[in-house]
Length: 353
Image (cartoon, one colour):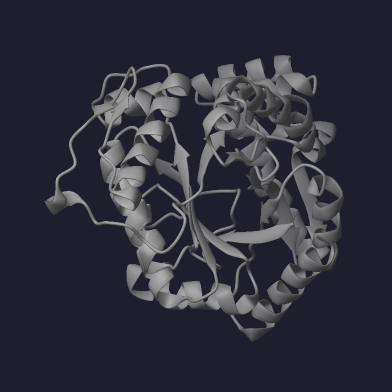
């Protein structure tokens, strides 16, 4: 499997929490070069406090071989032509190394943060991807823009706004997914999917992949080159003492995920539906401090991969090798010793691919 990491390297543990502060754009090119030198295949960013396309442009300019991807760039708040232009520019700058990962965002954020009318996300995403690709097709071929769907009808592209063709294939498109509907949509029209960290290997194999295959069958596609890029929940540290802190952190994270109704399906599959409902009630009552203690060991180990740095690659390989094509792993890097340890983990993951 390929190995990915999130920015900012060493400032957050991917899969646990978003960075507390906005990423320092002034060091991002150097950070991306460090990721490339460590031997990673891909660097990915998610849309939280900064524009992910700015990250990608800087990372593309600072590297030569490293693949680049948005794990989640918000789709619907941006017009398809706007997203198409951002992705097209990055694909040209990176010489074909970019993957566009799109997320739908939940109803509350669409309506109350972005001030938009909400529509069912699955059909909307299908229309959105079709619109983006239609714009790319016009730019690449010079053919007239013509795209009609329920949400988007595009027919205007004048020379002033047409950047023209690039020497590379259009960026692959992946969708951030949890539920079966969006998995099916990814099989219908996307090049891959990016499961949420709460998605276990069993959930991927029994629910997500079959849903994608049903979507592919609906549109007559084959999934031979379909990518599944996973950001798993990981508790990893240099030694057993430090590992205990990571375990406490991930217990709190898994308790939070269990309390979120839109993430309930994986918990139900593993037989923890009632616990997830209880966690939801505790979260509504703001009783956050009680929740981690209610996470049983069996549930924890179903959802989290735990190990010291010298063992974590083997454990990740054993758990995810037959269900994902890329896996995301990071650890804090504050000195050369840390960098060497991380480089060894990356090499171990590559050797076991």
